[in-house]
Length: 418
Image (cartoon, rainbow, N blue to C red):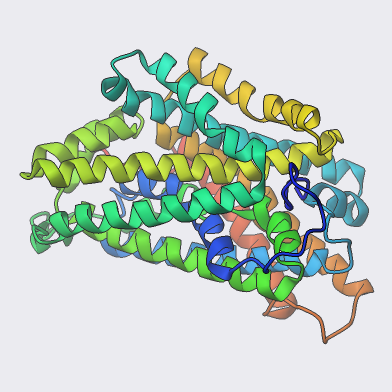
């Protein structure tokens, strides 16, 4: 994933000021928040406020540590080494092939979900069909990924800033109208919440699925310690935004109002439509819509960068205009075509992504660091916390999250129906 770390269209090796932590943190946060912001309210409707907060807090902690495990596993390799290179070297060809398939599947299905959602939101704004809107969205905004990581850094900072401003304005409008009876669901005294937490975990895991960008962060900063700080800051920004978002949504939209949204697969236009029915101010509603579009765009660019760099390394495309054009095609065209042919619900897509993502966000990072520690015993270099107990804990979390998803698919876990 390291192909585009330095500006490929400029002279390599130029002396520049080192990248700031906030720039890298914004890339990590932008990868997370699109899926999380737009998927968590519907996914967490059954668990509701308290248990949703518990689920995403636990997930954030585990996913931050598993990202640090990847950094530790990378530390004996060249800064340009990717997830693909390190996994093949430490765990072997067969494990690496399976890991590659899950990385591409998750990255592709996230891009697919963002492309589909952007089309649904933009069709009314542009006055064209959702399919045409999706095509225009990809053609215009994937250019930042094609250009360089520095371009993604710059646009990510702009988008995160823009998201925060529209989020603050929109959430402030929601927050002043929060009804604590709705937030606590006190009107349903006999309601059950805990049975729905397990089915929520795959979407929560996807909400912190930045791991395909870890190699990019390490190469971008030049060392593991600075990259680890950017990762922690990025996941913390995402978690804080999730808290505020869920508080505002669950405090305004009654639990039972999520039933028709869930029936439509958790599509973003359905969620925004339901919110519009309870928001009295048109300016607040516009701010929420603007925030949602910015969240999709920032995550599209952030996820696109990770998949782009990963496929560039995997396919051995060179770092030229022509080579990057090939990488652009294999990164963005498959999810665009699938989005046009087979659109389906946003939360459904995110759930599938979460189940597959357990492989390369939890299981593989833990296995990599477990084996790497046997050959690299230098205690003075970067090391993820928790020892082997944390390694086993991360693996268990990943396996159980995948199991919960498949249990939910076949009806072994309760589904919220109102």
